Structure formats: structure tokens, C-alpha cells
Image (cartoon, rainbow, N blue to C red):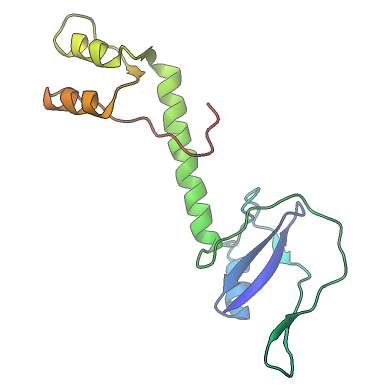
Length: 160
């Protein structure tokens, strides 16, 4: 395995692991390597410190010359690939899109959600899209009554 320090066209730096140098070249050519910050697929190798084994058998990192500091970047966890990160970002974007659609097109009934859902289910009020809050027990009771409910996806980086 080879770890490369990479830089995108917007000067974001990140690291990624590749099976071989030719695997890196192939993935870059097919635009499978992308910046975790901006999603750019225009990526090139950045200057990195080589690892040298000393006479005592310990690895020593040779520091590269100081560079202009870049903004903090997302670090790719060991075992992850740029392709997996791209898929995760795509999934997160779709979940956020779903949540935004619900919030835009449904009424927020807050803590009254179980009551409002029951009223619609039993024909006491007109059906309309709603969302709100329910405890786990309340959600289970609604499902047991045959009332369709589903959680709205919330991601850790959501600020709402």
C-alpha cells in the first residue's frame, strides 16, 4: 500500500491510500479520486515527507520544507478510499435533500404529532403531510395502530 499526500485544484490537501502507484494513476485518470472538501476530481500528488529506515531499524520521517499553511482538511480514515467517501457524501446529500423536502412541503406540528397523526388516520381531520416530534414509545403505538410513520433523517453535521 502507498499513501499519497494529494492536492486538488482549489489547493485543498488530503491523503489517500492506493494499492500501487499505477492504481493511483488509473483512479485519477478515471476521476475516481476526489477532494473530500470540495469534490473536485482534478487531483495531483502533493509534496510529502519520505519515510527512511535508520540504521537502528526505526522509521524516521524527513520533514519537507515549510509550505504555506492550508486550511484544516478532512482526514481520510485508514481503510477508507476516496470513492467510499464520495459515496458517503452523495448519501448524506440525498438524506439532507429528503429532509429539506419534508420540511418544505409538510406542516410542523411539533409535540402534537401523535395526536394529529391519529386524527388524520381516524378521519377526524383532513389528511395532509405533517412532521413533528414523538417519543419512541409513541411512534411504536402509532405503528401498532396501523398509522404509517417514519423518522426524518438527521445527520451529525446538521445545524438546524
